[in-house]
Length: 394
Image 1: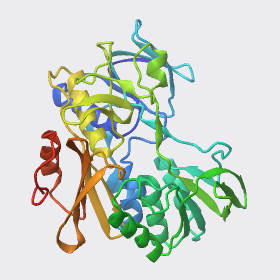
Image 2: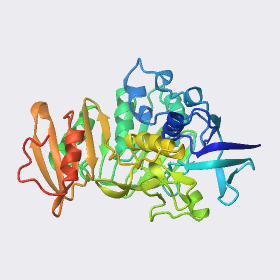
Image 3: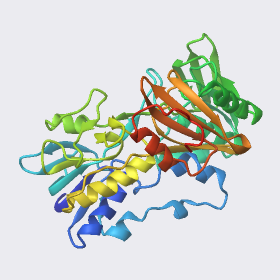
Image 4: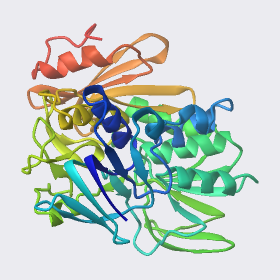
């Protein structure tokens, strides 16, 4: 197959959706093509570990982004791009299909980090896509024993979702207390206790070093010498950014594989841009970074779309991130690293605001069960100093 588009987007996630909608804010008629490696249309990833499990009235139709209907973009699913010919302004897929472009946006996101020796299978799911959600939903219908690997966003959210849906869950993570690398001790202890109280077997202090799967189940070998047997394993260890395609095309990539862009999300090629999880960009407050959260995917995608279509704006949005765990929730901005100095301010109803201080400035703010704090938190970070008092800033 061969086709040419005014705007071509590589990647089929949320960034692609908002980029197409951003294009339409500036250009009602330009042709848009989206090349998605996944077999499904762009879909909001947070729902895959949150609301689709925790709200019985919330369906896939409720979450659907309706990218094609709202923008007129042509979706090419199951299309993995192998090469970008910048001189010819053409990309080629693994099946030999070729697509031309006027402006190109690389929004390839990333692929789940895998455990050496533990291949994906019917019993081992490296969780990220709507297809993975469908597989996991089908597999847990009879409430099996699920080993969840990873103590970050995906691991904790999926473990909470599964135990609330009747599965027996073992959560494996490398820290002594769940969340202790990210949160101060009081909050990490609360999180750990929430999972234990919900019936999750929390196996801390160990990593999965290998394992096997069969039609009967999985066997996980842990670094502490123990073995975990389960009906299936769900792995949530973050992603590896998919910047290889850009690097092969001669574009600059960062040490972790992200694609380096400027404040207008442009690469060194004025017709090639990058956005979303894969883009390393200069944040207006926090400095150069790469962010793997939905707020950034949405806002950066929309800005990239408008810029592709002629806007003279820069991307100056500092993203927030959030999570929901049982009846608890939090929002945050910046760097959350419990090895930094932390200042904890108690709020009503068990809420806390945590300020993470590195040298002579606040670099991160956590709002634990505290609302309406994101914009004030950004102001604290933008000051690039340490306030005399942390009381009543948020």
